[in-house]
Image (cartoon, rainbow, N blue to C red; front, side, top):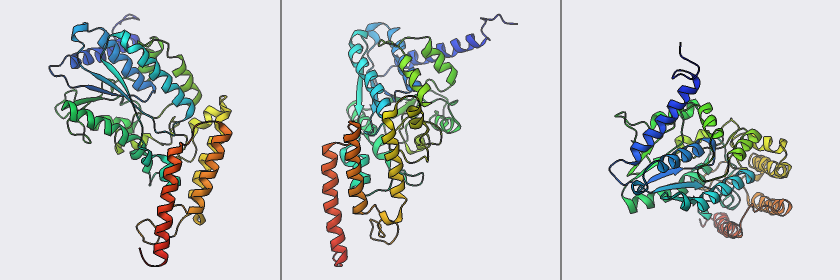
Length: 371
């Protein structure tokens, strides 16, 4: 029988798995090419652990061999849960302050959707109904496109890149399927990214369990300083967070029935468990946002607030009426004043009103059979 600390004990197995991940990262970092690494960072436990292990690995490498560039890419949809986004911003700020002192070639990259693709310009401006499982227009515009834009620019400049994702098979059956899709056919570490030419996908922590992730984070301090106490506190208050999303295949984890911290406007689920949990745990200032999120769904589901003609000119349940859009903008601006939170920018409001003018012109032309 193995001793309590032996190689087959729970602790021994955990330590062996972490050691294996670090070894794999070390070998791949020193591979004979200079393709930059892109770490998809959401601020959640998995991407945080991935970032921790990458920097820990780099610090174990001789300074003159730390030549591969690493980019920490974090996307803000502009409608993230305010509490969580504030936390993520603080982590990114700390990283930017500390990376120089760590002597590692790592850079933080923050991405956002183009303003014309923002949630409010599409919903209130163009009249898109609130997202549903069958009309999930938000994921591509708010999450996938911004990061894809950065990746394409980097590949154009560097030729190739390697995308590191914090996906784990043990997280859920859907994530296990995503991990399997990204596995190399030859059994190697890297597999081609189906969305981006010149990009290989690397998922170093795919075999770790949720317990492995938390044990490593709880027993460690971030290489960039501070602690993981705030991350743990957020998980306790909200249950979890939305992962880094790179393709429509990942969409089920965004707006799924599980409690996930993501966009406060998410109407893909009937009940936002994470937002409700945050309110129950002392963040009462988020309650008006929760009510407005429900309002978006109610208005979208009310036939009198929907055009009877689709945008392609065919009969059917179409975009939100101009009356509904004006009403929602007024309510959103009132909500912004009430909460003192920056919920919509002046630029978005300007584009919304420009879109209204275009739609009104189209409606007049249709009325006189000129369209």
